[in-house]
Length: 84
Image (cartoon, one colour):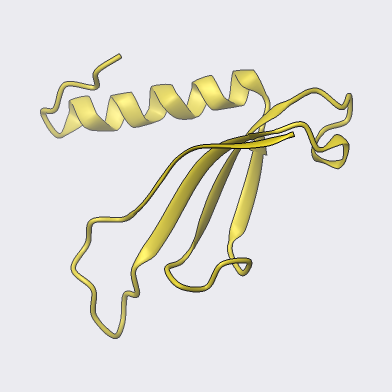
């Protein structure tokens, strides 16, 4: 099973030195993505327009929650409400 949850491009100004980056969050039950075959949250980062050449992180639930907490902490640091 593979399921896409959300995807978009980053928000920095595009120039020759910093190409646009796309991100995607999804679900995967690829047995090669974990030691125990359990489903993973997948996070993909790649240069926009270069599908298949990015980096995919397969996150266990605890690691996905840790990433979510880190993003929430970063939002609070810049004075933004982290939401849910």
